[in-house]
Each structure stands twice: as C-alpha cells, then as structure tokens.
Length: 283
Length: 276
Image 1 (cartoon, rainbow over the protein chains, first blue to last red):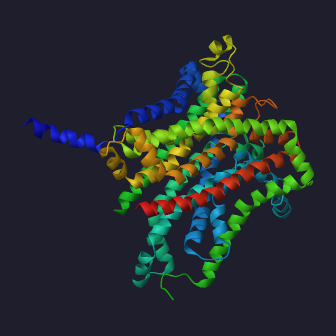
Image 2: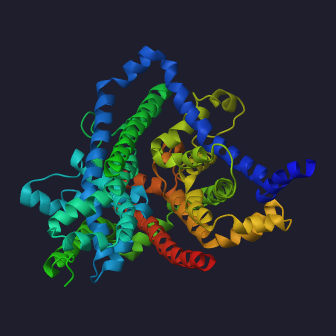
C-alpha cells in the first residue's frame, strides 16, 4: 500500500529538473533589484504631492500639451508605419528582386542604430539645408525639422521595424493556397487581398502597431534633436520629465512618468481587446 | 500563369516602392551619418575621436557595458532557464515582468533611479551623509543601463529553450546530474549561439543607450559622459564634425552587431534543426 502511494510521488520527482531554487532565486533577486523596486518608486513618489497636488501637477497646460503631443505623434507614427511596414514585409517575403537581401537587413537598422545617432542623422537630413529638407522646403515650402512633423518622422523611423518584423513571419506562414483557392472560386485579386490576406494579417498588424506605439511613445534620443523642443508646441513628455528633474521637482517628474506609463498601458490594453474581438469575429 | 499571381508590372511597382521606402527611411539616415562625419576629411574625424574628452567617453561606455552586460546575462539566463525548464506558479507573470523594461520609456528608466538615489531620493540624504556618489556617477550609469538592457538575453534565449523542450535535461536528471551540471553541460551548449546573439544585442543597446543614462549622468565632460551623451554635447556646441564622427563610431557598432546577429541566427537556426 505504502509502495503504491510512494510511486507517483517518486515519478514526479524524477521528472522535475533540479536546480530550480538557485536559478529562481537569482532571477527574482535580479528582477526585484533592477526593475521592480525602482518601478515601485515611480508608483509611490507622485503621491507625495497629495491627490489634489498630483492632479494640479498633471493638468498644467504645458504637461497636457506634452502628453497630447507624445501620444498623438506616437499613434500617428505607428499608423503611418502600418502600411509602410506591410509593404516592406510583403516585398521581402513575396517578391524576388535585386537588393531584396539588403532591404531585408536594412529593416533591422532602427533596432540597431543608437537613438542619439538616429536623432542627429534625421535632423541633418531634414533640416532646411539637408538632403531631404532642402528640396521639400524649395518645392513645397514644408518645414519638417524643428516642428511636430519632425517628431512624427523620427517616431516613424523607430516604429517601422516593429510592424515589418511582426507581420513578416505570419505572411511567410500564410502560404498562397488560400489565395489560390479564392482566385479559383472567382474572386478578383483585390477581393482576395481584402477578404483573405488582410484578415489573416490583421492580428499581426495590430500587435506590430502596439509594439511600435509602445516604443515610440517613450522615445527620447531620436526625437529631441529634431523636435525643436518648444514648450506647448514641440516638447515631448519625456523631455518635460527631465526638465522637472533638473528643477528638483522629483514628485512632479514621477507624476508625468506614471501618467505616461498608465496611459500607454491603457492604449495597449485597448489594442489587446480589439485583437481578441478580431479573433472572435473570425472564429 | 498562377491565378493568385499579381501581374509582372504590379510586382515590379511594389518592389520599387519598398526599395524607395528603404532608401528614404533606412539607408539615407545611415549615409548621412558617415557623410557628415567625413565632410571635412578623415583627419578631422579621427582627431575628434582621439580628443581626450571623446576617449574618456569611449572608455566610460566600454566600462559601463563591461559591468552591466555580464550581470544581465546571468540574470537573464537564470530567468529564461526557470521559465523554460521548470513549472511554477506565476511563470507567465515572470515572462511579462522580464519584458517590462521594453515598454518603459528610457527617460523613465533613468528617472526611477533618481527617485531612489538622487539628492531628494529615498536614499539620497543617507548616501550624502556618507559621501557615496551614485547619481551623476558610474553606479547610476550602470543601474540605468541594467534596467534598459534587462530583457535582451532572456528574450533572445527563451524561445529557443522552449522549443528544445525538457527531454535532454530530464534525461540528465535521471542519470543523477545536479542542477548546475544540467545547465552547464546540457542547456548551455544547446543555446550557445542564441546566447551569444542575445549578449551582442544587450551590448549594443548598453553602449548606445541615450535617454536613461542622460537622466542620471549629469553630463560632466571627461567624467560621466558616455559616447551617445558626448554626441549630444558636441552637437549642441555646433561641433558637427566631431558629433558625427562619434556618431559614426556608434553606427558602426550597430552595423557590426546586426551583421553578427544575422550570422548567429543562421547558425543557431541550423543548430535547432540538428537537435530537432
């Protein structure tokens, strides 16, 4: 009797891999020391202002303008990156042309280029005497650098690879059978793309949009060189955090940081819900 | 012709558009860095890099990376090993927490350490009474870098570890190996190329990080300035040749990392294929 009781216990112990305790201890200590305790400070310190003071600190016109700019520009940039990222992924997966391998490698460039380098490079390109800025100014009278438009371009640069690289594997796995079937059943090419390909890619596009947005909304290095940093006009929320820190307004800086984090999570949660609705609608 | 195939002109148009996007948005910024760096010749660019403040920035960047990358490699490996090879409550939560720093703004990543160690931080008065400098000094630069680069190793290694399953580790355990032996002799050799790729990505981000270190550095030339911060200082002083020379050096680091990553991905892909 006792043997039969001991057996499942022994079998379970044999299946477990030893060494969990130490590894888990290291992981947990590391996570707590580097990430969790510091984030706890972000969570608690804004409330030193009191709830009224916190509200007043966050509803200053300059803070609202910065938050609006950061979130608006990040959403717009991620939206612009959606078709461009899809275009890049489509070309790399579906087409064969000279330069394809190089294009494939170049998609990762914004991941690998330090943000400050991207910042000075984009500013040099788009400034009124830059390679791209000069013709745009001469032909259309557009000013991109040192305006909110410049911020959107910088964020587009950082968000683009997230969308391309999220869609790419899905597109690769999709295969062409479904499209061929649709064509055999008499669908036009446009109908096939709209009714077969796009719905299959939609969840990946949403995921990529979320990743690109999350990265863009907090972006600092690639933005501050090109933004012009005018209060109320082209001043992003992360920059305002650094300004408040320089004035030793720690609680105020933490308040903006916490607000940014919570707003970003709200957007990501909404995207997540949209994705679930999309999946349900499908099934 | 295949019914689901687009006409030739359309395919050519899409390819041309994609190349145009790649050229305008990806290739041109990179070209601009090197052109601006070499605008006044090799000598000027080299001089800007060999100038004492630039050399100090390069040394500091290497030092910060040399401290933070190994630490995050150990932490990331431990986390990935727990998640992939063991069952415990809160496994999915751990995955989310490990990736959390990716969705935090770099500026916030620096801010949190100022909130703790800064003059008006939780530990600020205590540290000041003992003349221990954390903020505006090396420790804070390392902490901010650790936060920002925390997910890289775990994230690169975890999918491969999960794909490889636990059969080999379980066999080793049955044969009497202890946890450390299993990790070192079974798990580690299976993931070595992916691990190297993760370490390289972690290192590239550690050396290139700007926002987080900018908040905690204090920008003291020759002392707490890392390379990306040095780019900013030179740029704001209108020393464009110098700024772009240092930026070009950082861009090279990014390019080398990308090339190495793609080679390692091919190798690790083959290794996975062999194991499976």
